[in-house]
Length: 429
Image (cartoon, rainbow, N blue to C red; front, side):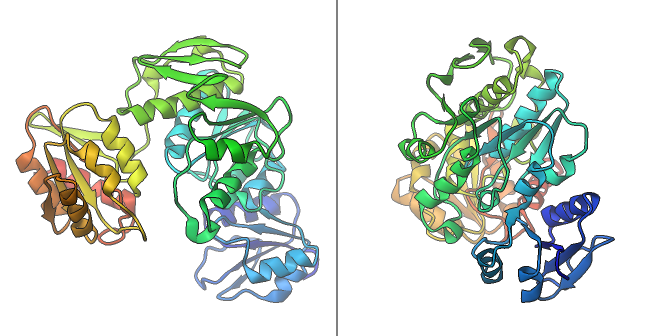
């Protein structure tokens, strides 16, 4: 099998990479420990096991983001001189349009989604994907003029030729440390987005995060800042751009997504769009729409709005949601907790809540943390009981917000399943 291209991990990204490799004339071997992994016509499949000879005899290895770069067989092949690259970097080598990239612990999906809309709004035919939606391999040969790409830290373990024209890291909080080890290593992986930048490429980091600014300073690129100058700063219903080809104010009063954190996401998207060549005059924030399960208004019943933020699977995401909501609300929190999670940061924003309902496997731990902070809360065994209690406690003009600060796997298949059930329970009664 010498000279083949080996794709390791046959989830969505691996399938897309294998199809791209076939289009580019490679003889492709796909490997996955799952016997029932998806198959790609035209490839050789080694499923249920990984064979050492497939790695060391490969001409190139493409690695899906779910496969750690420290995998022993992969490291042995790299030590033997076999080039290895992640799916994102493999696709980037064949992409003939500029890349605008978004990373960060929280908010990157919404920001990427907004960025893609802004670019298309400005008349630039834009692919939106990466870690969200479609893998970047599916953009190749698609006639796109730009790619708005969400980037995870996993995808930057083997970045290859990935080089964005502009890239932003929105924030950095503890996550994925079981794979990266420390917060510094996690942040350094994100900053690899900047590693191949030239002096005119924009490397964007938060002004208020000294750790990220320090880590980014080890990489090239022209520095722009979120929350300061040069870069973008939000002030009420306006944002101010500087250090770009079209500096000046932009009105954002018509932006529909709720919460201060979403205005920050919008600011990052606008800054990236302008770095990508869009003009401020072409921006109309009133037309922008959010993603499902991310502070999504799913309906209203008897004067009570129901907001699905099921994607908030960690404390930082939920904290942003509750801090950003300005009206009265009933909060729903709980699910499957993450190891070492502390809920103390939620105490202050939840003092403003009309009621707090803690549900699921982690409900008792959240309830205990809130009670220690002298925030009243009630316990519910699961989603159905929690929504019924929220409907009872809410008043006209309130919002019932599901921003759970936990994963969904105690009761649901994934966060989308949880969000759909919340909508159904809230509105179909």
